[in-house]
Image: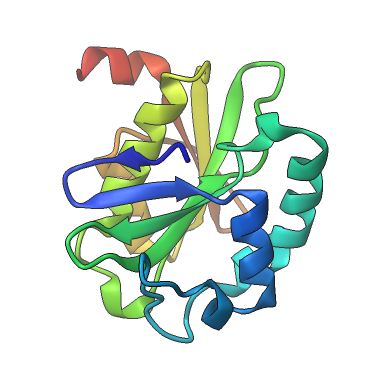
Amino acid sequence: MMDVVSSRITLTPITLEFGNQLLKGSAVFASPCITVPNDNWPSNGLKAILPYYLEKLESDQKELGFGPWIIKDKSKNIVVGEIGFKGRLNSEKEAEIWYYVVANRRRQGYATEAVSTLCHWAFANCVERIKAHCKKKNIASQKVLHGTGFTCISEDDGVLLYIRNKSFEEKHR
């Protein structure tokens, strides 16, 4: 498994086996190695994209890493959320990131650390630019994106578009 580790968290990409366990329900997924926090995980968003992602992954293992990952607190060995990309790179070597932290783990820096960690992994794996969308009303997500080197470049119907280029990564090593 290609886990990516930072100071407090471990990011684990969802494999075919992992994803199929999640589709059966998080109770089946729970194991001595990972504790699932509560009924708020996996999120409805992950549940919705998982079948589509697993179908793509089954036909092309290169999808691994460019789909969903789980965010685990290393010290507690508990799932605190999920993060990922909305598919492999486009022709401009651009990927779109998304993330979710379970409610009782928010405002503890997990999203910021996960976004920063996954961006670092992506830039080391051929990505040149990462984009993210968030609602204008979602101040917490705006803070996460600003704090991890993203710049807001546009707004459309209450949704903000953020971009982070690989050049930011190279300047801030």
